[in-house]
Image 1 (tube, rainbow, N blue to C red):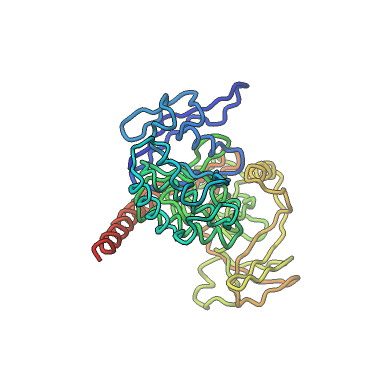
Image 2: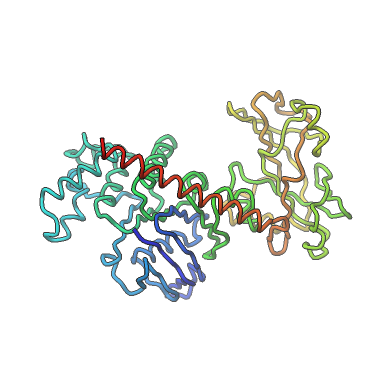
Amino acid sequence: MASITLKDIVKKYGDGYPAVKGVSLDIKDGEFVILVGPSGCGKSTLLRMIVGLEDITSGDLYIGETRMNDRAPRDRKLAMVFQNYALYPHLTVFENIAFPLRLSKGQFSEDEITRKVESAASTLELQDHLQRKPANLSGGQRQRVAMGRAIVRDADAFLFDEPLSNLDAKLRGQMRTEIARMQRRMGTTTVYVTHDQTEAMTLGDRVAVLRKGELQQVASPRGLYEQPVNLFVAGFIGSPPMNFAPGELDGDVLHLPFADMPAPAGVARAGGGRRVLVVGIRPEHFEDASLLEEGKKGTGVTFEANVDVTEWLGSDLFAYVPFDTNPDVAKTLEELDRDLDGEGLRTQLVVALDSESRVRDGDTATIWFDPARAMVFDPETGENLTFDADAAKEIDAQNEVDRKASLERAHAREAAAAAS
């Protein structure tokens, strides 16, 4: 195992296009770090530079204490799992997993190869499939074979390039669990690329969010959710995504298209005197006022909403509430929607209500939210004017404590199993 350090990494192609723009990132030994962002943000290029499949234009890459810029991929002691599995169709599962060991030209005996392959197969529940060919396996089984090939190499780090994108939704969920369990048990440094923020939030110890080749924020999943540094991160993290609406500042009040709310302390000064700001409220921070306890109603903002469409999903009820945006921030929100791979649809609130709510299509509903949970952004710079640096540090410090404790528990279970 080893740490991975990126110092001001830049990638420019022959035509001068900058795919990666000065990314610096410290990945701790044994840490699970996710590179996430929309299509074309440079995350896969960054991963390929780490493994050595792309040249680094400038900057420094260290694995452990060793600078790796000019080392060949085979000398970096990294194992990569690709999106398309990259299995050899004419080889059995056993031989596919054993392939990197056989490439080492006599370094391992047949007994050692068999032991390593069978150990990896046991970890991934492939024992009954070792003599089958890839064509006779399901997508999830093929992905586990690709992971097995990475495991037997005893690599310093695992690199995953969108490994679950070819699987259906149910299999993706199952494989997320398998990958998380394997990483915790082995404690191997892992870098994982995905465009799916659900994967990022459920798998990573820390998540690095990229936009157009630039690193926006690196934090724990909870840190990104509760303390995003800017509009882009706030919009990318969360499902359904955060609602953004124009807020017209009038003294200590923000006038939204659907309600008035108190302006957070210091926002007027931080906003540089701008009259119109962008207010972000997550769907899950709204509630059906008719289901609230009486004492809670007076602690937040209540407004009447004309509901366009509802979606009942069993655990949640999503209500869609159209509103008119302000032309002063319309351009900013349209650009953000494009960067987030959106479809440029109508401006509307997505409100997540309790599944017991009786709100339905065409209703006029009374909706409640806590203004203390709203975020306010500068429409020019995208900066989160309500970002709390101390709270963000506290969240990530607790996340690091939890990560180490989780690894210790996994190692203790492994030791107990080996002893028995």
